[in-house]
Image (cartoon, rainbow, N blue to C red; front, side, top):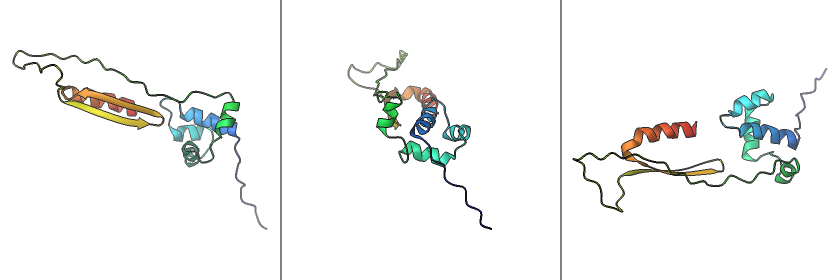
Length: 130
């Protein structure tokens, strides 16, 4: 007696788009989303990389035609306290700065941060990359 192996499931473009939208939510873990949809997380990772993902035309037909994220420059206010012993630097001369540039998905971020506030920069970066 021969038992047929379980057949592969075929997922619609709408289902794939729903799973990918759930993965795109802030703080969403791919493994948790896959578990919620009763999928293998490796399959969801493949969809996120574009293999087997719904075509742009089918996503637009489903009404999910959003403009792609664009670069937004942020200015972070800094407070500088100068002690009488530390002379102010001449205008136009930058003090030592931390420069960060990274890309996360379609979002590109470029940040400059004073070295004197490196701990604050590290805390902010941990939150952003979480």
